[in-house]
Image (cartoon, rainbow, N blue to C red; front, side):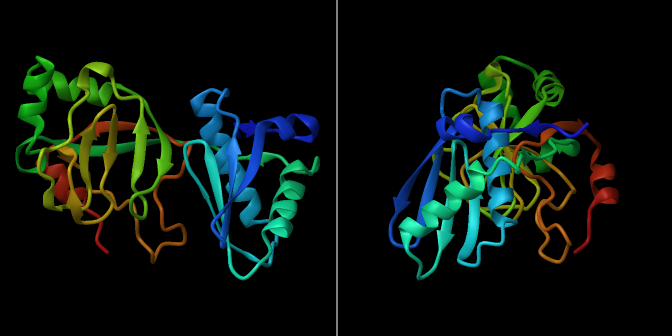
Length: 239
């Protein structure tokens, strides 16, 4: 069933406010009194609606935790804000997205999760117990950011929280699954990074050659599925 998030008419006026951001963008601020999951779905739906509204001046609409940043070039802020408000208050529109439940295969520990042992020790668990708790939880994509396709995932069990590395790695491989603070995430590309690495997925989270470059989108629900090293190699996606 397609989940609908609908704010129209007077209710929409209370759901957001618009403010300038420099001379090339504005920000739609969402009502932070809403529950987090609802707010993330709303931000994703607003951004999708604005991108499809035929606004000739629009460069991009970027959703985040409780904002949507609307980027434009050589355009008047007052007119841009008026156009955004008009689109978002139009009672013919609904902010509709479909949160999917996606399974992400992960090879935990060893060479692919070099920080797993230390994470388990800090949590007072065995490595196997840590993996079981991490894979048993259901997560939600709170935001895509930092780099193309990087999902910030809410839902990490409190006992699995981990500090960032004191010294970030100069290179983290694409597909690495990590924990930092109260969130878990997946590196879509090779990059420096300071998250605690506990596993590796063979899936490509970002591929500009695909019709939909991003595997995940804001609002999706996600589960990790433990796999073996052999499975990791067999399931690896080629460019």
